[in-house]
Image (cartoon, rainbow, N blue to C red; front, side, top):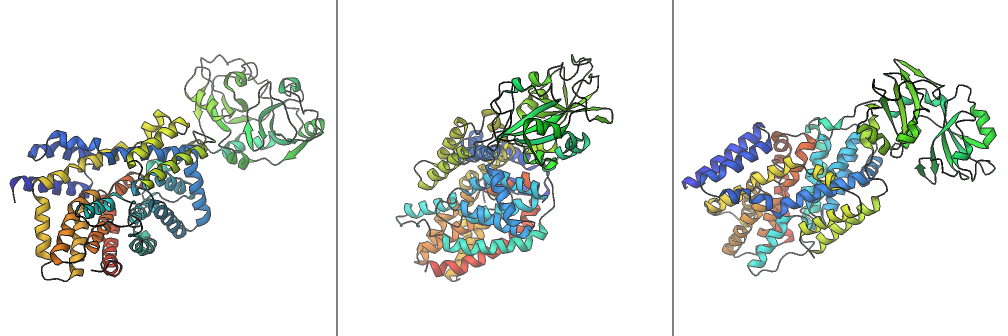
Length: 604
């Protein structure tokens, strides 16, 4: 063993120890490796930094953006709601459905892509069901890795092994050559995870919780249920065809129109808004003498139910916020009407709290004082304008539902078109995967699903740095003879054993290498070894090539074995030991299944 190889292996061992004790954090370890490895003289600093230009790294970054576009437009929410609806309150059913859906989609596109897309879906499910995200992220990563065993294009190691066969003049695998192995492993994986879920931690990331009062809390606190009226405009109503400026509800009978529901959409009223038959009006009776029954009879309005649930159901369309009147506000000494809050901010004052006392009526003429808390209702974009700052009103609190409001509404079809384009291009192979993902990002931007600002924010740079920092080990091991050492060791270990013993050894070595370096790099290293062993034994190369591909996807044992695992570390709040505890036993199961099935499907 050369000094250079000893240095590289020593640094690799040190990195593994730091990963195991989780000190310092993983991305800091990666930066340390990135800095120290060139000091060995095996690689240059430029080679150490080459990972930042690696196509797979760019692919992962773009997939974060695509996943964010699915979240912003509500695609992730709908998929999560569908999974939650199907699973009900059963965590086992939820885990099983999540794994089946992830593996099904992962069979036709990159497993890394599927993971990036489903992370926000799983977080949404965890939040809505009260389940810890750590209970879902590990099943998600396992299913994504198993999806790599389903088809030829499901993961990069499959393509690496296939191209190695072609380089030796051997016809490659077909699209579904991997499916007979992937399906049994998937079934075992679901069963294993349902059994092993008791070992999953209950870690809850800081972002999982919600803070602040709910809309229903404010409905009770400000007694809105007694004042707010939801009514439908009957065909005989004198309001039909008239604008709000002509009706002047504020003057008679002391009511304010907060919002209009029209054909399933919530619209904000203006002075020029014309009332139509069938419109559903949300009316605030602010005057002390306002009579709801008289209002309905005067304007031929039909009463409809209203409660806290209504505001929760319409939380995507209409929001609430509490704002305080500061000492230097020009509103001090004026009423809400005189201050023209609605015309200036596009928001309606429906509640006023002075100290601990909430005023139920008389908001129209109540003179505002320093420290008064106003409950405002209106579109979220108007609320965000106040949140951005101003001297007349200062944002005090937002409801818990605000965290769940979609930044982009009505763009689900556009997001799905972008996703279908990416998947189609990846499956067809017309362009490289990274180019397909970049085209998807650009299309999402053009269609308004994402912005440049949201795209930059969506990328998990901690994950990117971690992957880039570990990539140089592959080059260093090849350059120092580490690969040749592994090949010689394999030949020594397999001497005198049968073909299935050779398969088991190939699988074990490939899986063990994959614990420390990228599974794609592992496939690059082991595929030529497998074919050489097959030629020496004068046996078909297909079972040996297949066992390497399957073993490369058996990257369950550490968070750095595959980008799929790395992606779920932060949202699942996992440590190194969590992957070892669940991944090692399942890797043994996959080893046994593969060694038994491969010779049957692909005879020697």
